Image (tube, rainbow, N blue to C red):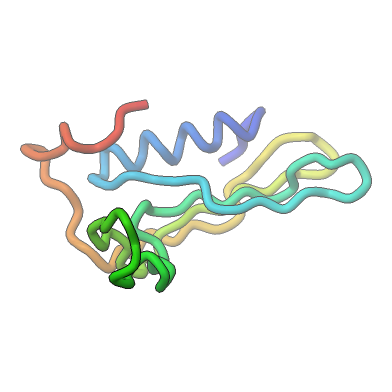
Length: 111
């Protein structure tokens, strides 16, 4: 798929995620050195990765529940150099956790 702007690609993945039963977060990006334009953007499942260890220790003031489960679901949007459009460069749809059901989908973020 081709998108005119990066935000259109991000919105596409957020809508896909909401329908599929998970939330997303913006993960990382790479910029071109020549003009500073974003060349790669990663959007991941909100359960991607694992929490840093300091937040799990007893000396933390605010204890937070463990929400990250190492999920690999993500999309990578890549800038097409000659057209200034973005395309889906890679798409990983496998989740390592249970997705929300239609009954509990009101808990997910709305765009």
